[in-house]
Structures are given as structure tokens and as C-alpha cells.
Image (cartoon, rainbow, N blue to C red; front, side, top):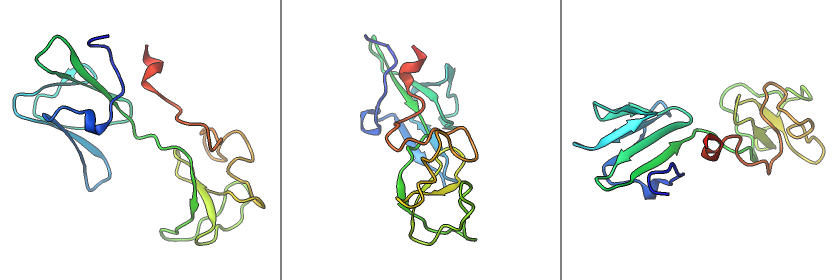
Length: 150
């Protein structure tokens, strides 16, 4: 229905709104001059706002309907080769080192690495991550969707 919140992709965004990735890894919403933009129901008065997980962005388009989008930082769990970023990682489930290039999963919530091979299925050995409450199915999809709001 017109004006109802809906998920949108970046290519759906009106030209008066831009998402920009900062050097810190955070995302900023940049609103063009004269754009009427709200973030979680509060006007973006200076044209720049750092976004947080689950933020709602609304833009008055000049017509009877507004444009809505939701911002999420959530990433699905995926198996990929482990690439050390400093000291070697130890799997919190089996307590063994994770070798460079070995198949592993980095928890999307807490960032801790777990083995994920046939011999060591540490990531999905239990229903939740060994260090937080993140669900471990590799085909589990996203934990949050905008549909949960309505």
C-alpha cells in the first residue's frame, strides 16, 4: 500500500539520498540539499547521519507516498577460507588452532571463528555459536527482517 514500509535495495533509492561507507567501516546516510529525510522518525536536519543496524529511513518524495527502506548490518554465516588478521585463531568449540586457508565460519554476531569441515563441523555442531546466541544453521537466513515490525 502507498506509504507502507518496504525493504529496498540501494538501486531503488531516490537520487537525493546516498549511502556512503566510511573508513571506519560504518555507513553514513547523506541527504541532498532540500531532501526531506527522516531516520527512525526524526528529521535528518544536517544532511548527514551515521546509520545503525535496523534503522528506518523515510524520504518524502513530493507525491502522496513516501519512500521507505531499512538498513541492516547483519551478514549471513558462510563457510570461507580462514585468513588470519594477526595472531592465529583458536576455535572456541574444539579449542584447536584454525589453519590459514582452512574452511571456517566467522560468527556474524560476535566475530569469533569456528572450524567448519566434515572432520570438524564446529560451527554447526550445536544450535548456537560457542560464544554468543547466534544461530548456527548455514542456510538459516537472516535473524531480523523488516516484516517483523508489522
